Image 1 (cartoon, one colour):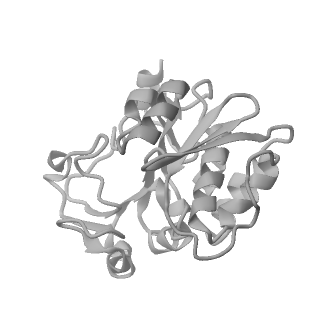
Image 2 (image 1 turned 90 degrees about the vertical axis):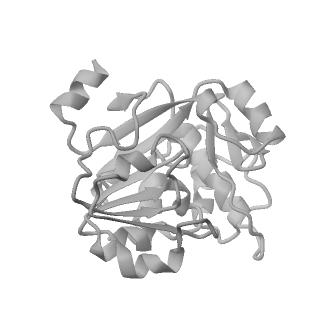
Image 3 (image 1 turned 135 degrees about the vertical axis):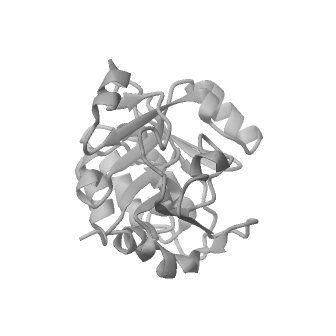
Length: 252
């Protein structure tokens, strides 16, 4: 169910009439500007060992550029996700909650948690948040202190009842397998690469925590100049299956 369905869902919601106007390649982020001026970002994932699907995404209809979500040229896939996010992640969209944190309202005490992508200390999650969990398994593709290699996902995600996945897993195509391994768990996708596409909640995902760009010009300059967070140029949002009473109060 969650094989290519993740990418098909994103592509199915794209409208006719929009084109990719510009791509900006930053140190850590790739950004796309659409013909209506909206801007989206995705984690820059290096890798051009195979040919691109298209010579360039610039000038293509968004519906066509969205096909490159399935490109195995990682540079191109990063561009495609940024373009798709320019449509889905808009500050004027009817998100369930704005200015939200990844774990708002999530009970962690006594749970077995899997984290794909070491995100503690980055963004809005701290070590203190996980002080009372039963077990915490952190897995990352890069070598980072305290993190297992991402191949450990095959062993540990099926043991978890809460799994937190970086949105950049959509670029490197590990997302479908991660969702399959986490099918018995509560699943949260988090990070600027997450697409605010409600249809994704039908694929075993319980919460989408992402960002909508609010200061586009400043962000486009910043990502080219240095590696760093885009939080100062964007607004966080949460879309989830079953908003609680507490969530409703936050959005009022």
